[in-house]
Amino acid sequence: MASTPRTNAYFRSLYLQDPNFRALAARDPHFRAILKPNGQLDFTDPAAVKQLTKTLLEADFGLKIELPDDRLCPPVPNRHNYILWLKSLLDSSSYNDPGGKLSGLDIGTGASCIYPLLGCAQRPWSFIATDIDEESLEHARANVALNDLQSRIKVVAREQTDPLIPLDDLGVDRIDFLMTNPPFYQSEGEMLKSAAKKSRPPHSACTGAPVEMVCEGGEALFVARILEESLLLKGRVQWYTAMFGMISSLETMVDKIRERGIDNYAVTEFVQGNKTRRWALAWSFGPMRPSQDACRGIKATPWRKILPMIVETELTKFPIEQGVSDKGKSLSALVGGLDMISWEWDAELLRGTGRARENVWSRAWRRKRKREELAGDSAVSDKVERSEICVFGFSLAISVKMTEAVVECRWREGHDEAIYTSFCGFIKTRFQASI
Image (cartoon, rainbow, N blue to C red; front, side, top):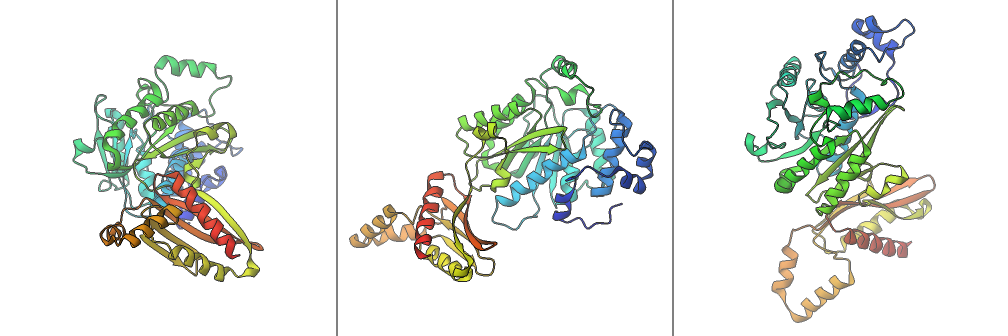
């Protein structure tokens, strides 16, 4: 149905504005049949909501889907936002070019199997999709087959008492990410009480069964179970992620991962119009750090306390009249003169990436090397030279903005914030001295 090329830019442009219902109706007779004469959609009608989901999936992603009447009908823009964030998280926490063949796990995939379908429509990913509800599993398998994705999406039945991350049960060594959109509520009573508190009817009809809406302990305890399993699996999953319906759950889980000494994590907020807000958390035991947009995606001041460490810093500025290309050469020479594991500078893009075995720019390092040289301790010196263990990875870039150029540093790899801060200070001081 869609004629626009489905590039990454195309997917990122989706749903920045509300869908044009009249345009959708002109392309899809099934949607036209449920649209009101005034061009509005009755969001309190489950059939209308279901058809909107089906129409958007086919129009924007080339996906076909069938949904039962008694299971959740997933809102496409909200689910798409989660996939977009995952792509940003994975792309920015790797030195490799984005868009590779990655493997993921969707815990609680539901009848729609929407996250694996959306992921496979946008990237050459593969998925394990799990659920405990037999009816949902039956429909999920049918939707995978409807899109001929059986070779990339494996739907797996689980029991309530099984581990949530079934790597060992399935004989899987590692995966790149896991995702989950767990049930919000701790009990059916809590779910009904929440609905009764609302002063108006819900904006959109909800057809979810209790198995999809309720779990013991609610969403926070569900994700806490994943956290406990992650402490055993660690790097066998690069990124553990979860979406929440309540920001209090996010705050609780950030406290828990900090208590367990996990320093590499990300938080974000998904906003769809003025009506729906969701929040997400990711954590990793690895050293690769995502971009600032991916890891610090909550802007509201009251929630700054749960944000992870800053990973992008503006170091200094200079007038472009001083020669951007020459300053790029100076910056490259400054870093190239250090005892790095690697340093590569692209003179055309004015951007470089480096990796260091420790803070080799510090006075302490220089004194250490001086002592080794004076003592003639070549064995120790050679051992340091041969070390390929990276404790700090970074990118430096010069970007031109109007009449000035800006030097920026991005923390790419490592766990020690003090090393990142020290490096930024070193580059800023030495580079400014050359201006």
